[in-house]
Amino acid sequence: MATSASPLGSQEFRATHNGFGSPDKGGRRKEPAMGHSEALLLQSAAHLRELDWPLRAIFSGAARGAASPPDGVKLVTREDFQKFFEDLQVADPELCAAPGLPAAIERSFDEALQLQVENTKIDGGLLYWSFKAALSSLTEDLGLNWDKLINTLMTPAL
Image 1 (cartoon, rainbow, N blue to C red):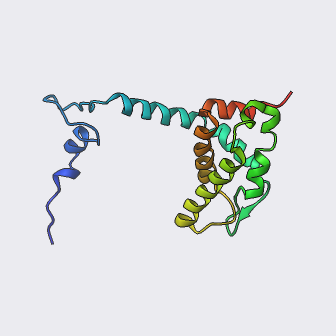
Image 2 (cartoon, rainbow, N blue to C red):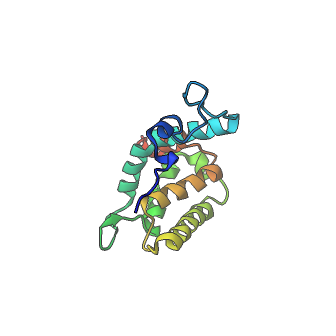
Image 3 (tube, helix red, strand yellow):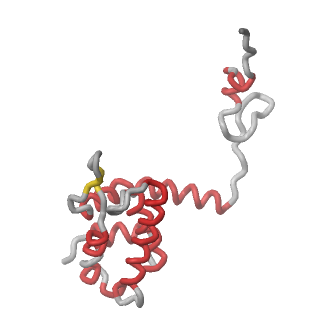
């Protein structure tokens, strides 16, 4: 049975249509116009990628040996998450004076866990991406940005 080649699979098409914009008359790709909010979003995503390694180290330290069977992936339990924030009083007493901080910490854990369970059925604690989501939801509540959050968590108390 003979099949006709799709123009979408041709080398010429792929060379000029690789997912962004449309080709100009010379066959070169034109970048799509980007607004200010899109540029900020891309900049923010790139910045979060840079912070991923220190955040993974923080996660590994917070996940005190809990693992999800059968593959042994680390999890941060509710107790781990609460312990994770215990030394915040020493690191940033002003931040700890924020009203409703304990409730915000619990809420961020619960919301991240609920979303994780809906998608993975893993309910013994937070996977790395859920931990990251829980911290992200707290950044606004705590008046932090990712840089300040990472620096606060990585700086040892004097």
